[in-house]
Image 1 (cartoon, protein in one colour):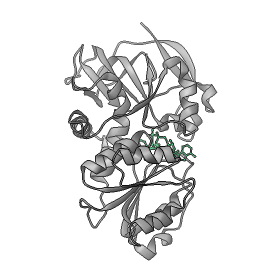
Image 2: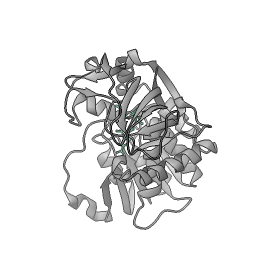
Image 3: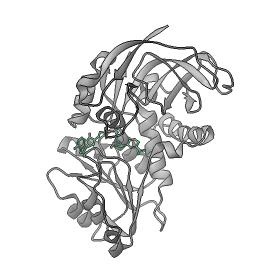
Length: 327
Ligand code: NDP
């Protein structure tokens, strides 16, 4: 059986993304064959395409999708043919009609959640879950506390705004345009700062009356690192989880001393250390989406063949919420 697949043979710009046909093997032990109904687009795909994150080439891209199980290999206990499923997982290869992959991190998709929503939310929503629920400052966090979330109108960002509101947190958003700021506010942020036209660290200090925030969630990296540290209150937690503007430069731990700050660099895949751990994060996400606490915004849809344009738009900061590739 053949599948259309987006592959790269070398690192580079969106032009290296090539739609090719590949033979899909039968699933081996511990694997499943999936037929995708929709595919999620993520900024990590850009890092893997450009070579910022180095993976062996040639490489099939994509980390997120939803679809149906078409065949099950030996030793797979939790899935059967015909199941509706969704996943966010290594190895890449979700930009495809069909694929074989390890079953470990493939989750049942509740009937109430569409394939498109499943594809748009697994990697981004599970990330918002562990950021807000597991990355705790040493002094704890309570409803009413201020946190700062960069790129808040993006895929992870719009989910985090809504989930933070559900948790009672006062999320201060940053975003790259006034329209994006308005979107973050409409989705639960209590303040929004256009960090391309305003000094976000100064504004955060005004908003918090000089106190600073307990946690900064920073996926922008290079451009926001210093300002983010300046926004934190004493014993505050800096959660670095991405590099949309480029990697953070090496820094001296002494810069943390004045406020005794904590810094962590997080990745979703460390939290998905077992099938049970993955399922628990996914169940929490399914709950907030099914109950309407979090609405998944699919603001861009591209046919699989237009994947180059999808990458151009994501990198050019033209997108809001989630983007999907349709099949
Ligand atoms: P987004 O939809 O949030 O897109 C990235 C956003 O980053 C852009 O829309 C833009 O928003 C902002 N940005 C700031 N500076 C730049 C720049 N120089 N170039 C491009 N974009 C810039 O993407 P995702 O929702 O897929 O991911 C959000 C971030 O979270 C990414 O950095 C991603 O790598 C990270 N991530 C990390 C995970 C982890 O576990 N470590 C898991 C999932 C995602 P604006 O215009 O508003 O500034």
